[in-house]
Image (cartoon, rainbow, N blue to C red; front, side):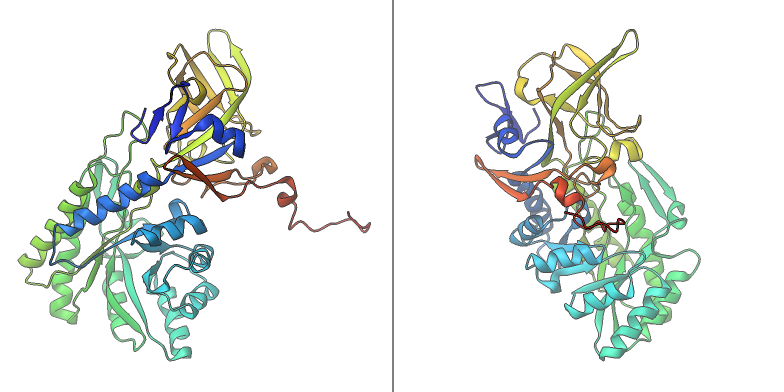
Length: 438
């Protein structure tokens, strides 16, 4: 089993000291289960890595797009994390959860006027500006209030990371950020430096996701400093904050080999320090935005097995009571997962099956060629490492209600998001019929 899972005397998978069979009996299935202690450990790993540099100012912001709920935001606050939001809905969730607005950073390539207005109304800590349209909108709103706001500019650093591969200038073709290469970033710096309301604190970049080494971060930082050096001379711009984003990889399966969190942070910090020294600049605050690496491996989705279909000489399909409605990633971009039979966790794997979802799509396949013990209808399948972008991407395709979410820790479970009902599915529907509905 993975580090956060164990097997009890009944041969059942346990998470956070709680029997997964009991969880399904109590809360139903499909069910998202989060091991809170693992989330605590991941947050602490980032904080411990930065704490080795006592002269450095740093912030670790949980990227709530990975999984946002009132309980998760409250846990992030308890753990001393800042928060990254990318929509008015995520911001509203954070405020509803009581998260300090001054510790929230607002991302997004198309923030609406209403979203920016809301962010200013709650006194958000930082807005990360993504384009010239947003500069114009935010300038107007701040001038209307006669109230400044702290901002970072999101730039494309000319480095794109795809796991092990790094492509220089590859990220120029992106819907996000101001390009360094074509001069857009420099023009944006000029515009906001001339603003009385947009308080430019520094730059933000994000080079990719599921990154398994440090080279991409180092390349991006070095490239950024080449421009910072020019802007210091030509524009008298000093970068107080350098936000290098997230993208730290996790282990979905045996092919994935992520580094320890401290290795990523050491590489980032030492590169920033070296570049600051080489260009004779003060060391900026260093911000990071981990999301997947905080919650990804902490999450497990539990399903009940249902129907079977064997095609001789081809494959055996085993269907579960969920699928692409609760985990869109395999259908969206062929994400790979591993699974175990939670109620037969000690049994030997004896068959290779395809785990199919129940949605009316041939592409609704959760796992190809899963190795599991001999199974039967009613068994409980645990799909591992679903804590990031599972619930966040959950949808109502085929009018399936969204599953419940449970936090487990120290042998106890707590419901943090209720299971939707069929009534919830039609709650906002309006009738076309002239006849009264009941």
